Image 1 (cartoon, rainbow, N blue to C red):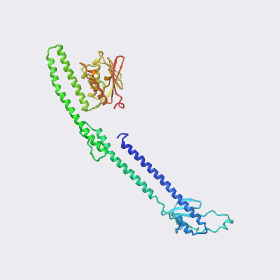
Image 2: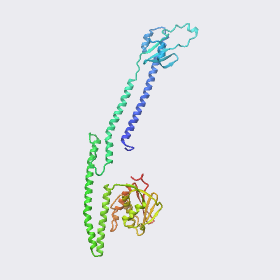
Image 3: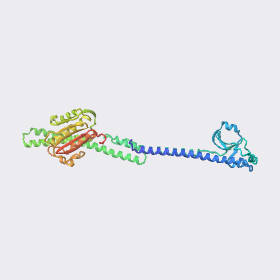
Image 4: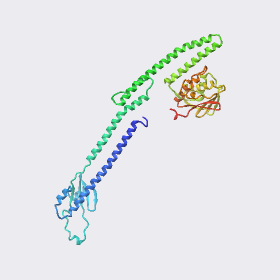
Length: 415
């Protein structure tokens, strides 16, 4: 899964929302608890004032505050209860999930004033019980419901997007032998429709590939026999200008068939790369063997004499052979081959390539076509081979010298 996949982005989004909602819940919970405590302390404060009043129905007024005198002993609550808060004129204690208020003795007034005040009623060992039921169950139910909804919705979205992830993997793993995507098609949503259409399209692609491959192989096979017979017949003729011309025609046709065959094998993916580490000198020897030439035909400048290259031996030597062959064809002097630490340069004197021929990804450049050359397939195949190795083919021209470079350290640059 890519770093920017939809499933990862949605997962991160839901995770962020989940954390945010839970954080807000705990903030709301703390605020609600503080509001409860403030309300309780306010009612107990009012109850404390009622204690000092000498008139009125004390018990009835307490009921209006949702407070009542408790029958529990003061010593029991103090001993076994849990103190919640304390202020100058009282304490709030929790005992067996009930909240109680214990009025403490106020500071003594001056003697002359104390004699004028009546003693406060109901003060000795007075314990007040809070009748108001405080509960967070509604808040908890709301919180759990929201969390459950988010998780269910996230699971539903992931379930809907998972076929898209499987479809992406199936497309990535699609090979020439596959005639369809091996994916179940269910539902009527857009992803199911896309999967169905891709199955149809890839079936057509596989059929077209098979038909093209069969067509080209039949043509190559059928043309090979008459061309070889033509070459043998031309060899049997008396030496003359017409015989040489005829041999050139058949040799050119044979060369083109070989180029077509290589391009077909390469494009169809029949060449499976087998990477190993080889010495460049061994790769160069094999390339020279393919060209039927000697290394003395090249001027070799080896700054990195023990250069090791991670490559498929057969494919890489074909690429190297094509560049050297190009240098031989379009120059009257020995090509110069330079072996550096991270690149291989093959330079030869000659005319600069036209803009069309610098586009190595395009085969069949008409300006290549002559009686001895090809159709630009050599550089096209070379460029494709080097890209499969994560290497790069570069071209430059200066002072009448064409230089082709195989750049070996571009693994991060070449797709």
